[in-house]
Image (cartoon, rainbow, N blue to C red; front, side, top):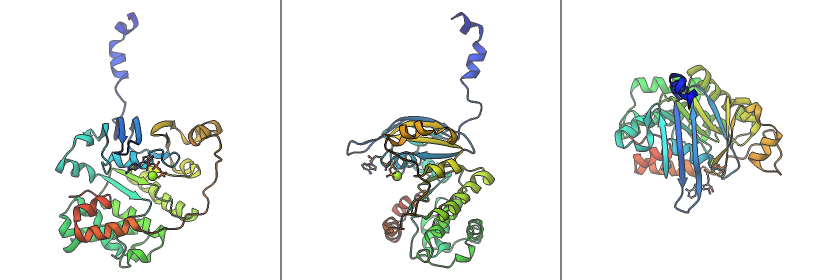
Length: 307
Ligand SMILES: Nc1ncnc2c1ncn2[C@@H]1O[C@H](COP(=O)(O)OP(=O)(O)OP(=O)(O)O)[C@@H](O)[C@H]1O
Ligand SMILES: [Mg+2]
C-alpha cells in the first residue's frame, strides 16, 4: 500500500495506453441461436497500422469474430469500439457512418457476377450515396475516376468493362479489394481472402493487402488458413481456439509447441498447398439476386454499409 501511495501519478499513467487503439474488443461473446458459443469472452486491442492475421482451426470462430466487428453478425454481449465509437450500441445513421469506414473482403469475392468489373467496384460507394442511384442511376464522374484509380492500384484497370465472372479468381479478389477501397476504409477486414486461390495467386493478392496496409496505413485484420502466409504477411498473429484467444503475439514466436496448442497434437505445418478450386459462387449469386430485389439486403450480402 505504501508503494502505491508513493506513486499515484505513475500508476495512473501506467493504465493509459500510449496510443489509442483503432479497435478495442471487450469481453465479446457470440452465441448462435443453435447454442454454439462461437466467440467466448474475447478481449483485445488493435493499434493503427497493424496487419493482424487471425488463425485457428475450422470452426474456431474467425469469421464470427470478423463479422461481429462490423455487425454483419450481432454480438451476444461485450463491446466493439472503433476509433472511440461504440459499434455495438450504434443504430441507424451512426452505424452506417461507422461501417463505411470499415472495408471487408470475402473468400468467395461476393461480386455480382453478371455485372461489369467497374459496376462492382462502384458498389463500394453504396455507403456514401443513395443505394438506388448507385444501382440504377449514373455514377458521378468522381466515382468513376476513383474506381479506375482503385482498379489500377490492383493492376486490373484494363478489365473495367469485362463481366466479373469472366475474370480469374485472383482478378476477382482484386476487384473485391478495389471495391472495398472505394469506401476509403481505415480498417480492412478480410475473411480468408485467398482460400479459393492457388499459392502463386494467393501471394499476389496478399501483396496488395500488404501494400494498402503499408502505403495507405490501413489497419488490416485478415483470417488465413496457412501459417506460412500468416508468418509472411502478419505483424501480429492472433489464434482462436473454440472461440477463445489461444495465442496473441509475433509471428516468429509460434514455435512447434505453440503450433500444436493452436492446431492440436496431430497437426503438421504445411506450406500453402494447391489452391482449392473456386467452387460455386452461391454467395455472389445470392447477392446479385438480392441486388435486383432489395438494395439493403444486397449491401449486407456484399458486406457493405446498407445506406
Ligand atoms: N450462422 C450460424 N449459426 C449457427 N452456428 C454458426 C453460424 N455461423 C457459425 N456457426 C458456428 O460457430 C462456430 C464458429 O464458426 P466460424 O464460422 O466463426 O468459424 P471459422 O473459424 O471461421 O471456421 P472456418 O475456418 O471453417 O471458416 C462453429 O461451430 C460454427 O459451426
Ligand atoms: Mg470462417
